[in-house]
Length: 384
Image (tube, one colour):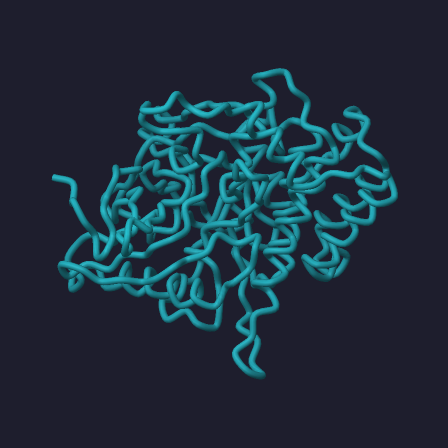
């Protein structure tokens, strides 16, 4: 039975969830009819039996409380009711970047290079804020570790919002990732992350570079490769830039991507801010004036509003995601284990703590929906 209320919020409908928790669209109950739509993620289960999940949930809340930037989805509050914790976040009405890219392909509406550049520059601005976060003189060493098209929301007003710091590494975390465990979406991982090596903020720069690459090329990294070959590509950090040239992407923009996805960490852009500035420099030099208004128009074109009264919308809250927690990809003596995928959940639901004991069919992938439930059922390693 769905709750009528969670804390001071009236539940409008369930958006998704699984064995770990549930996600709801809700509305605040203010005085004199003042109300606001929000998204609530509620952690479910006995605290004594799920101590690790509770700690991970609280870790996310602690970090989220420090993040305040126009390009990061804001967490409003952490609450507790009926013995369960819940996280209240701003509601973003619009698609994820993955859905926007897929929608553009399906509608045969090419995503302008300037649109891709503007969006990723905004993502870099959000990352830069997170990376630079400090507690007095101490850096909090925040690393997102899961930058991907599924974790970027695009509002109908053209806002670009980075979401899901649920597996982010930071000095505030009390629950540590176990040794040898890789968290994130393999297709967007840096080679050092895929090898379960030490990572710093430049792993996020690499992931943002892959996102820009895919948007410009109109195809996913490693498309068409067999699973084992894709594992090698991710592990070695290989990225073929020829699709960018085939798509007539300007060389200056290709150069920015190439540096972002350099296999050698020291050869990459030193910060997300530097990568974002390089992208913006291209936008200025190319006189490619592109901004929120243009993004909003693109969203409205590809995802027109639903008929009034019809449940749902083009909101990214309806999207399914494919976060994975997995053992290291096979590297020499390291054997890879079965990828354990969390049940598909809505886009803003992804930061719920991972439930390793739950394995479920993979959700549709960006650009080329291709569920792999059969492979998952056979215990085959799945690379998103």
